[in-house]
Figure 1: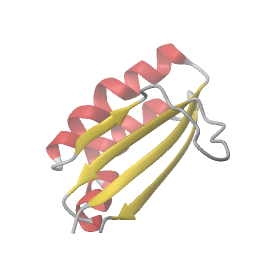
Figure 2 (figure 1 turned 180 degrees about the horizontal axis):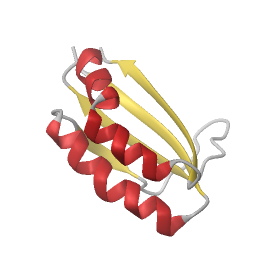
Figure 3 (figure 1 turned 90 degrees about the vertical axis):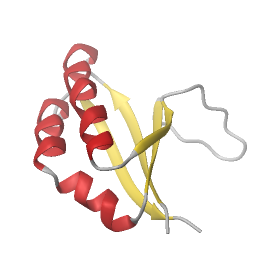
Figure 4 (figure 1 turned 120 degrees about the horizontal axis):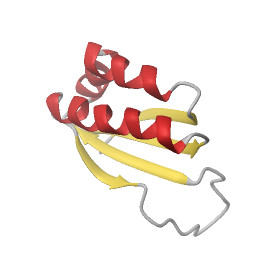
Amino acid sequence: MPAYVLSLIDVNNPVQYQEYAKRAGPALAQHGGKFLSRGGVKTALEGSIPQARVVIAEFASVEAARAFYHSVDYQEARSHRLGAADFNMVVVEGA
């Protein structure tokens, strides 16, 4: 069953965040993930999402998404993001 990782992001330090982005994409791909949306224009249909950036990635399963998150490669990428962005991430089981 597919799983989706949803990240809601406000970037505070774009230069530092770019270091994260350069590493996170390859780590995601190494774990079978693919980006469905990577910070595209968002339009609220109801309510609001205050974060400026929304990223959605698809994985084969919740387990694959968790393996990506806990991988050495992603954790190394994540270390470059800390302090550069307010970041919320959740994995959601697909239908």
